[in-house]
Amino acid sequence: MRHSTVLIIPAYREAGRVGDVVRAVRRLDLGLDVLVVDDGSPDDTAEQARSAGARVISHPYNLGYGSALHTGYCHAWRYGYQRVLQMDADGQHDATMLPRLMDALDQGADVVLGSRYLEGEPPPSSLARRIGTGLFAKIATLWIGKRITDPTSGFQGLSRRALETVVNDAFPEDYPDCDVLVLHHRAGLRLQEVPTRMHARKGGLSMHRGTRIAYYGYKMLLTLLLLPVRRSTPSRKPDTVARWT
Image (cartoon, rainbow, N blue to C red; front, side, top):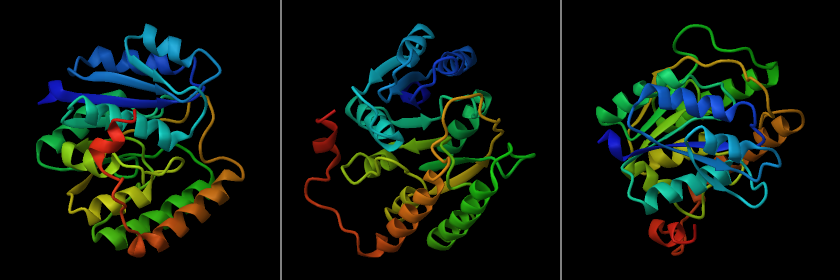
């Protein structure tokens, strides 16, 4: 089934890094299709990704990390991929860890989360980032009923069933993290964490920087509080939304 798997790499202003990431994946020869979603980068991100061998979809302007992921999800749904992998374009995620995500999907997991906290030392991060990750790990653990250590990880694998839960107009356009994991759980999907190695950023801009950390915390807490009363609308159907992409 691995021939029907696509790797989505959302990217914004990642020239000088995204090409290396794509080449590292292709050297592994895992039989993946590689899709880079360029989120309106003003630099050569799209050109470098394409030159490295990835298929590229470009937004006309910057829409946000969640929107870039959602574009990739809709592409995967529309073209019938049975599984989706995702990783960042900044070099943090180790491509050699991708088989761990794939093996967990092979064994029946619907959502596989690569955790930097289950093996070795995680890369250095700010105090605010560590506090936030710890807080939302506890919240996710309470919601889901099993231990979650790295709810903000962008290194993930999704089954076709999991893909169906995110191909809709309710997907967050900025920070799809702990709230999306809870939605997967509420949809009856099987979540699993696997240990993965991660590295420090090799450049670029982090989503969780400066005052954005405070906004992220506020937004995520509000979203989680509203989840019990959140309801779907008739327009939030996978086939409907996927046709818009």
